[in-house]
Length: 159
Image 1: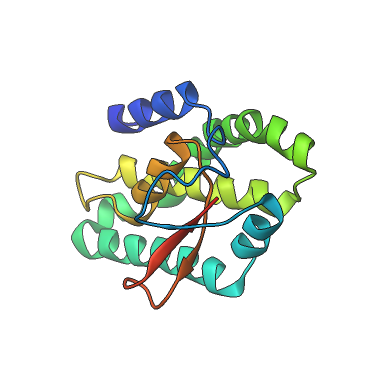
Image 2: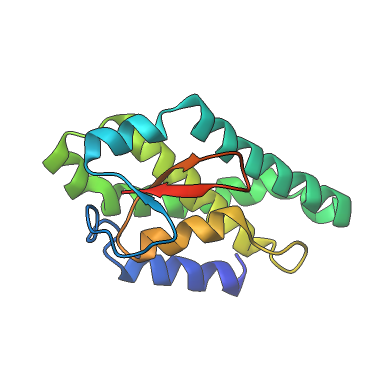
């Protein structure tokens, strides 16, 4: 695991990811009002497709720039899942219990954090983008969970 990824994980470990849900502390995003809205948004076909497309685009750019490194993708995923799955479970446990959030919520957080780490792992080949921008919101106590408008125009949806 690259030092960038280790540093990213250490920063994630130190923060309370959902401490500011419900607070409207930025004018750069669309805020949702409650967990029900946030879960519905993160389960939307549009959001899931956008997140999958972001991951696919990143992998494509990586393959174009360094096929040898790209071939290690699945190996890195396995390595990072061993760290990110327990991290996500720890960080989501209280909020899931307190709000009776579905498994899909945890799955979406896991997807974001894993891909954030993959962007960190390969940042020397292709710069981090979509998932690094998601991390900003986790680190600031929010849950990024959707998009308003046609990407890249529009606004991120956050709880």
